[in-house]
Each structure stands twice: as structure tokens, then as C-alpha cells.
Length: 178
Ligand SMILES: [Zn+2]
Ligand SMILES: [Zn+2]
Image (cartoon, rainbow, N blue to C red):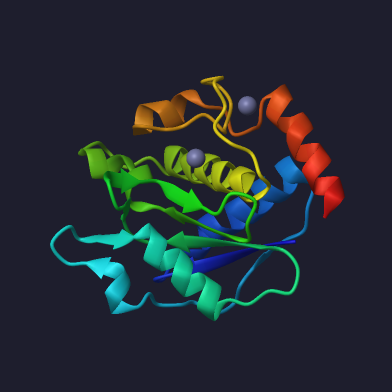
């Protein structure tokens, strides 16, 4: 099971879209946590105006306990990882906790007119990418595969919201191990 955990007032529409998209692509049960969590102040870097992805993951590990299954945090905000200007998301490799940040998935962030469609599909791509890491997938050399590393939003737009054949096979083997 995958639990989607909203962080900082994420609008319901994107959560429902993610739940359906993830369930369809992976064939696993996906639930949306009914608790809307805030993030602790120490996870926020005031100078950068960004959340530290490592600290967000630590917070999730502490607060959202699950017996079985994986947790994907969805942050209404921007994130970074020490050494990187920003990240779209971060996840434990072969672990239980991952996170995506929505801010840079919006066209408005780049000074362009808002596009709901682009925002939703980008969110799903980043969610599937981090979930892939949770199931042990590493980055894929195929630029169309959702496990390809996104250095910028155009990389995300080139990717499809699905795993390539090779990644899908690896994932299938992992999912049966559950
Ligand atoms: Zn990655
Ligand atoms: Zn792949």
C-alpha cells in the first residue's frame, strides 16, 4: 500500500489525481491520509525560502508510522537538498519514505500562464519517480522513462508518466516481493 501524505494544505484535486494515477500505473492500493500536516519550522530555510528535503523525510519518519507500505509526502512548497539548488523530490532507495515538492511543477513558477493539465501530469511523473526509488529503482538512461533524472522541468516534460520496459520488469519483481 502507498499512503499519500499532504503537507502544508495541498489542494484535494491533485491528491485525487495522484491516487488514481499511481494506482493505475502500479496496480497497488493507494490511500490519501486524511490528516493535513504542517512542516516543522526547522525544515524550512528562510534565506532560500525552501524546505530541506532530508529534514522533511526525517519528519515523515517520525510522524507518519506505517506497519506495511510506503509513504509519499506531497509538499505545497519548494524543496532543496544540501548541495543542490532545488529538488522536485527525494526518496529513500529501497525504503519507505519519499517526498515531492509541487512549487516548481507549476507553469507560473517559470513566469508562464498557469496550466492545470501540465501541473497534474508533472506531479504524477515526480510521484512515480520517487515511488520507483522506494521500490529500489535507480535512475534510468532512457529519457522517456519516468525514472530518468530530471535536471530541469523540460526533462520532466520529456518523460512519460510511466516506467520503461526495463524498469517495469524490475519493479514487477519488487512488487511481488512485498
Ligand atoms: Zn531520482
Ligand atoms: Zn526506465
